[in-house]
Image (cartoon, rainbow, N blue to C red; front, side, top):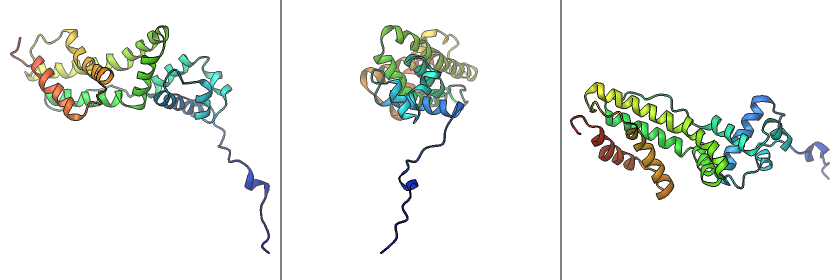
Length: 208
């Protein structure tokens, strides 16, 4: 009869290496984003985040005293950076490529998480996160669109008076409206349609 070689170690649970400092914080922030993008703001709990990060609740509370603080840091850490507007040789292509990047940000895990916060949290909390939206999404996007339009002016593609602030609200406004109200995920052809039928005619040199 075969001799059993079972030892207590065979039944011992596999324990992940102890994480500290930035490694643990990154795991907690990732778990918070995952919770937001799947269960939403209302169902997110500090306990659930701790479980997702495979750590104890105390480790979360030592770093963040509230759900609002944790979520704000998670969004800051996870949101894509809109930091450059590459020159693609024409106004149309510059705007099109910028829109694809904005769409990527909106439909990233952080983008879904941010929408769950804005749609679900109370007015007082929403005010805090609206500021984050402005700083990390709206203002950078507008700055890059301005840069693309400035290059278009230098090429002679854009009329000289196309500088009103409202012009730079058009693309983010349309994209957010379609995403929130109509549920559109903005396929490439819809982005191209917006650029070709709205933005280029709006900005074209020689129009009034």
